[in-house]
Length: 93
Image (cartoon, rainbow, N blue to C red; front, side, top):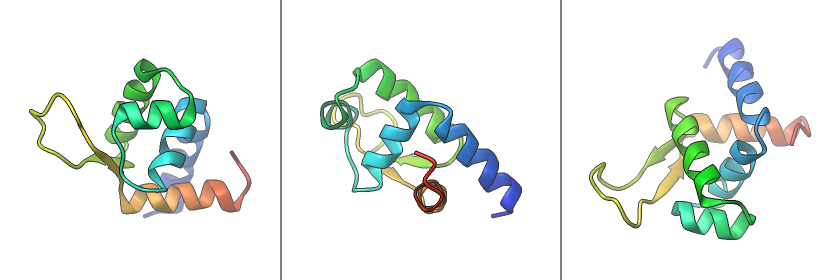
């Protein structure tokens, strides 16, 4: 991954506390939106939006089939791990 792309993604994640908390939780292991919301004391609507945004940036993946409506499990991608480690290493969140 080029540095420029990674820094763009770091900037994108840290510009929203919902994206930060969502990726922080997923860095601990796969989870459903409701689990992320309850673990981080966030609104599920905000978590769902953050997951969609992070997915569009290839930082998280849906781990179950697309047509599943309940119990959708998300996980962090390798690129997401790199971005999260950069955020943590640089104390940006």
